Image (cartoon, rainbow, N blue to C red; front, top):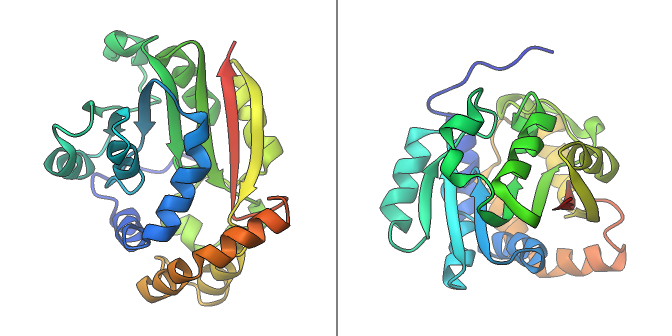
Length: 243
Protein backbone atom coordinates (compact mmCIF):
# COMPACT_ATOMS: atom_id res chain seq x y z
CA UNK A 1 0.00 0.00 0.00
CA UNK A 2 1.61 3.25 -1.15
CA UNK A 3 0.88 6.77 0.05
CA UNK A 4 -1.39 9.07 -1.94
CA UNK A 5 0.13 12.18 -3.50
CA UNK A 6 -0.95 15.26 -1.55
CA UNK A 7 -3.48 17.35 -3.47
CA UNK A 8 -3.39 21.10 -2.85
CA UNK A 9 -7.11 21.24 -3.71
CA UNK A 10 -9.06 18.14 -2.70
CA UNK A 11 -12.05 18.58 -5.04
CA UNK A 12 -13.88 15.39 -4.07
CA UNK A 13 -13.41 16.15 -0.40
CA UNK A 14 -14.59 19.73 -0.85
CA UNK A 15 -17.72 18.66 -2.71
CA UNK A 16 -18.49 16.09 -0.01
CA UNK A 17 -18.03 18.66 2.77
CA UNK A 18 -20.30 21.11 0.95
CA UNK A 19 -23.01 18.48 0.58
CA UNK A 20 -22.74 17.57 4.25
CA UNK A 21 -22.71 21.24 5.29
CA UNK A 22 -26.38 21.48 4.26
CA UNK A 23 -27.27 18.52 6.46
CA UNK A 24 -27.69 20.48 9.69
CA UNK A 25 -29.58 17.72 11.52
CA UNK A 26 -26.83 15.22 10.74
CA UNK A 27 -24.02 17.57 11.75
CA UNK A 28 -25.77 18.41 15.02
CA UNK A 29 -26.22 14.69 15.70
CA UNK A 30 -22.51 14.09 15.22
CA UNK A 31 -21.69 17.07 17.43
CA UNK A 32 -24.05 15.88 20.17
CA UNK A 33 -22.39 12.45 20.05
CA UNK A 34 -18.84 13.69 20.67
CA UNK A 35 -19.54 16.81 22.74
CA UNK A 36 -19.93 15.05 26.12
CA UNK A 37 -16.29 13.93 25.84
CA UNK A 38 -14.97 17.46 25.19
CA UNK A 39 -13.85 20.00 27.76
CA UNK A 40 -11.44 22.87 28.34
CA UNK A 41 -9.14 24.03 25.58
CA UNK A 42 -10.17 22.09 22.45
CA UNK A 43 -8.39 21.44 19.15
CA UNK A 44 -10.18 20.14 16.07
CA UNK A 45 -7.88 18.41 13.59
CA UNK A 46 -9.03 18.64 9.97
CA UNK A 47 -11.76 21.24 10.41
CA UNK A 48 -12.40 21.45 6.66
CA UNK A 49 -15.10 24.07 6.14
CA UNK A 50 -16.27 23.99 9.76
CA UNK A 51 -19.31 21.72 9.55
CA UNK A 52 -18.89 20.65 13.19
CA UNK A 53 -16.82 23.61 14.35
CA UNK A 54 -19.77 25.99 14.26
CA UNK A 55 -21.58 24.12 17.03
CA UNK A 56 -18.63 24.47 19.39
CA UNK A 57 -18.46 28.17 18.58
CA UNK A 58 -22.20 28.56 19.27
CA UNK A 59 -21.57 27.02 22.70
CA UNK A 60 -18.74 29.55 23.17
CA UNK A 61 -16.22 26.76 23.70
CA UNK A 62 -12.50 27.56 23.56
CA UNK A 63 -11.92 25.76 20.29
CA UNK A 64 -8.98 25.98 17.91
CA UNK A 65 -9.63 24.99 14.30
CA UNK A 66 -6.96 23.47 12.07
CA UNK A 67 -6.30 22.09 8.63
CA UNK A 68 -3.35 21.60 6.29
CA UNK A 69 -4.91 22.77 3.00
CA UNK A 70 -4.77 26.46 2.14
CA UNK A 71 -8.28 26.62 0.68
CA UNK A 72 -9.82 25.21 3.86
CA UNK A 73 -7.72 27.51 6.06
CA UNK A 74 -8.83 30.47 3.95
CA UNK A 75 -12.48 29.44 4.36
CA UNK A 76 -12.06 28.99 8.13
CA UNK A 77 -10.35 32.37 8.49
CA UNK A 78 -13.07 34.11 6.49
CA UNK A 79 -15.93 32.57 8.46
CA UNK A 80 -14.55 31.96 11.95
CA UNK A 81 -11.74 34.47 12.55
CA UNK A 82 -12.51 36.15 15.86
CA UNK A 83 -15.10 33.51 16.73
CA UNK A 84 -12.82 30.50 17.18
CA UNK A 85 -9.99 30.77 19.72
CA UNK A 86 -7.52 30.33 16.85
CA UNK A 87 -7.01 28.90 13.37
CA UNK A 88 -3.90 26.79 12.87
CA UNK A 89 -2.09 25.40 9.82
CA UNK A 90 -1.43 21.92 11.18
CA UNK A 91 -0.13 18.69 9.64
CA UNK A 92 -0.50 16.01 12.31
CA UNK A 93 2.14 13.75 10.68
CA UNK A 94 4.65 16.47 9.75
CA UNK A 95 8.19 14.99 9.84
CA UNK A 96 9.49 17.78 12.08
CA UNK A 97 6.32 17.87 14.18
CA UNK A 98 7.95 18.60 17.55
CA UNK A 99 9.94 21.53 16.16
CA UNK A 100 7.18 23.01 13.98
CA UNK A 101 4.53 22.93 16.69
CA UNK A 102 6.63 23.31 19.84
CA UNK A 103 4.37 26.06 21.20
CA UNK A 104 1.32 23.77 20.96
CA UNK A 105 2.76 20.75 22.76
CA UNK A 106 1.03 19.91 26.02
CA UNK A 107 -1.46 22.77 25.74
CA UNK A 108 -4.86 21.19 24.94
CA UNK A 109 -7.41 19.43 27.16
CA UNK A 110 -9.24 17.80 24.24
CA UNK A 111 -8.28 16.96 20.67
CA UNK A 112 -10.77 15.49 18.23
CA UNK A 113 -10.53 14.34 14.61
CA UNK A 114 -13.66 13.41 12.68
CA UNK A 115 -13.19 11.52 9.40
CA UNK A 116 -9.49 12.39 9.31
CA UNK A 117 -7.40 9.43 10.47
CA UNK A 118 -8.48 7.23 7.53
CA UNK A 119 -6.71 9.73 5.22
CA UNK A 120 -3.38 9.22 7.01
CA UNK A 121 -0.96 6.49 5.93
CA UNK A 122 0.67 6.18 9.38
CA UNK A 123 -2.37 6.44 11.65
CA UNK A 124 -0.39 5.39 14.72
CA UNK A 125 2.02 8.32 14.24
CA UNK A 126 -0.97 10.66 14.06
CA UNK A 127 -2.18 9.45 17.46
CA UNK A 128 1.29 9.74 18.99
CA UNK A 129 1.51 13.34 17.83
CA UNK A 130 -1.99 14.08 19.14
CA UNK A 131 -0.78 12.74 22.49
CA UNK A 132 2.01 15.33 22.45
CA UNK A 133 -0.50 18.14 21.99
CA UNK A 134 -2.50 17.15 25.07
CA UNK A 135 -2.07 18.06 28.71
CA UNK A 136 -1.79 15.17 31.22
CA UNK A 137 -5.14 13.33 31.38
CA UNK A 138 -6.26 15.07 28.19
CA UNK A 139 -8.75 13.30 25.92
CA UNK A 140 -8.76 12.36 22.26
CA UNK A 141 -11.93 11.61 20.26
CA UNK A 142 -11.53 9.85 16.92
CA UNK A 143 -14.34 9.15 14.44
CA UNK A 144 -13.58 7.09 11.34
CA UNK A 145 -15.50 5.17 8.64
CA UNK A 146 -16.40 1.64 9.72
CA UNK A 147 -15.96 -1.82 8.15
CA UNK A 148 -13.43 -2.57 5.44
CA UNK A 149 -16.07 -4.56 3.55
CA UNK A 150 -17.82 -1.22 2.84
CA UNK A 151 -14.75 0.21 1.09
CA UNK A 152 -15.98 1.49 -2.29
CA UNK A 153 -15.67 4.26 -4.88
CA UNK A 154 -16.36 6.92 -2.24
CA UNK A 155 -13.35 5.75 -0.23
CA UNK A 156 -11.13 5.66 -3.31
CA UNK A 157 -12.17 9.15 -4.47
CA UNK A 158 -11.68 10.56 -0.96
CA UNK A 159 -8.30 8.79 -0.69
CA UNK A 160 -9.09 6.68 2.35
CA UNK A 161 -6.37 4.19 3.24
CA UNK A 162 -8.69 1.97 5.23
CA UNK A 163 -11.91 1.60 7.21
CA UNK A 164 -12.05 0.43 10.82
CA UNK A 165 -14.00 -1.39 13.50
CA UNK A 166 -14.33 0.02 17.01
CA UNK A 167 -11.76 -2.57 18.03
CA UNK A 168 -9.19 -1.66 15.37
CA UNK A 169 -9.44 2.12 15.81
CA UNK A 170 -9.23 1.67 19.57
CA UNK A 171 -5.99 -0.27 19.10
CA UNK A 172 -4.59 2.66 17.11
CA UNK A 173 -5.67 5.05 19.87
CA UNK A 174 -3.98 2.87 22.48
CA UNK A 175 -0.82 2.68 20.34
CA UNK A 176 -0.62 6.47 20.67
CA UNK A 177 -0.23 6.22 24.43
CA UNK A 178 -3.88 6.51 25.44
CA UNK A 179 -6.07 4.55 27.82
CA UNK A 180 -9.32 3.56 26.13
CA UNK A 181 -12.33 5.20 27.79
CA UNK A 182 -15.17 4.66 25.33
CA UNK A 183 -15.94 3.11 21.97
CA UNK A 184 -19.11 2.91 19.92
CA UNK A 185 -20.57 2.83 16.44
CA UNK A 186 -22.56 5.69 14.92
CA UNK A 187 -25.15 6.05 12.14
CA UNK A 188 -26.34 2.52 11.37
CA UNK A 189 -28.85 3.48 8.66
CA UNK A 190 -26.12 5.38 6.80
CA UNK A 191 -24.69 2.02 5.73
CA UNK A 192 -27.57 1.50 3.27
CA UNK A 193 -26.99 4.85 1.56
CA UNK A 194 -23.24 4.28 1.41
CA UNK A 195 -23.72 0.90 -0.31
CA UNK A 196 -26.33 2.26 -2.74
CA UNK A 197 -24.35 5.29 -3.91
CA UNK A 198 -20.77 4.04 -3.58
CA UNK A 199 -20.96 0.30 -4.24
CA UNK A 200 -23.97 -0.04 -6.56
CA UNK A 201 -24.15 3.31 -8.37
CA UNK A 202 -20.37 3.84 -8.18
CA UNK A 203 -20.63 7.52 -7.26
CA UNK A 204 -17.48 9.37 -6.21
CA UNK A 205 -19.16 12.15 -4.23
CA UNK A 206 -22.21 12.09 -1.99
CA UNK A 207 -25.30 13.15 -4.01
CA UNK A 208 -26.73 16.37 -2.54
CA UNK A 209 -30.28 15.11 -2.99
CA UNK A 210 -29.57 11.93 -1.10
CA UNK A 211 -27.93 13.87 1.72
CA UNK A 212 -30.92 16.22 1.91
CA UNK A 213 -33.34 13.30 2.26
CA UNK A 214 -31.12 11.60 4.81
CA UNK A 215 -30.90 14.80 6.81
CA UNK A 216 -34.70 15.06 7.00
CA UNK A 217 -34.90 11.54 8.43
CA UNK A 218 -32.14 11.97 11.05
CA UNK A 219 -34.61 12.06 14.00
CA UNK A 220 -35.73 8.53 13.06
CA UNK A 221 -32.17 7.32 12.51
CA UNK A 222 -31.13 8.58 15.94
CA UNK A 223 -33.85 6.43 17.51
CA UNK A 224 -32.71 3.40 15.52
CA UNK A 225 -29.14 3.86 16.79
CA UNK A 226 -30.44 3.88 20.36
CA UNK A 227 -32.63 0.81 19.79
CA UNK A 228 -29.69 -1.25 18.50
CA UNK A 229 -27.43 0.14 21.28
CA UNK A 230 -25.07 1.49 18.60
CA UNK A 231 -23.85 -2.06 18.04
CA UNK A 232 -22.96 -1.27 14.42
CA UNK A 233 -22.83 1.78 12.17
CA UNK A 234 -21.25 3.56 9.23
CA UNK A 235 -18.73 5.21 11.57
CA UNK A 236 -16.67 3.99 14.51
CA UNK A 237 -15.77 6.19 17.47
CA UNK A 238 -12.98 5.75 20.00
CA UNK A 239 -12.22 7.96 23.01
CA UNK A 240 -8.91 7.77 24.85
CA UNK A 241 -7.27 9.53 27.79
CA UNK A 242 -3.61 10.42 27.89
CA UNK A 243 -1.77 8.18 30.33
